[in-house]
Length: 61
Image (cartoon, rainbow, N blue to C red; front, side, top):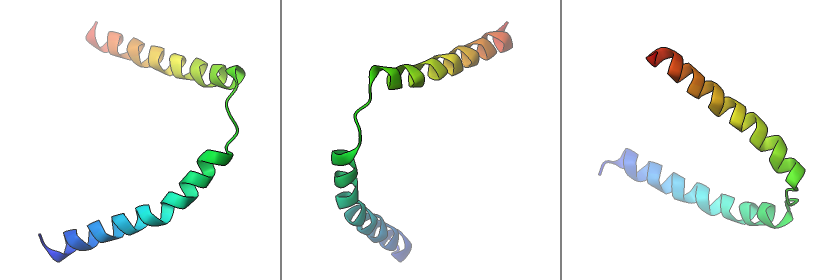
């Protein structure tokens, strides 16, 4: 391994060590999603998946 790979790995590990406590705090204190929140997420997601499927069918056709 060269020094660039070793340095990159060290910085990545250091970043994970610094982020870990903040991530745990954020996971504990986030509000839980309601069914209305999930609906507002799933409807656009289904629309995008349907549109991509439509585009794929148009290209194959």
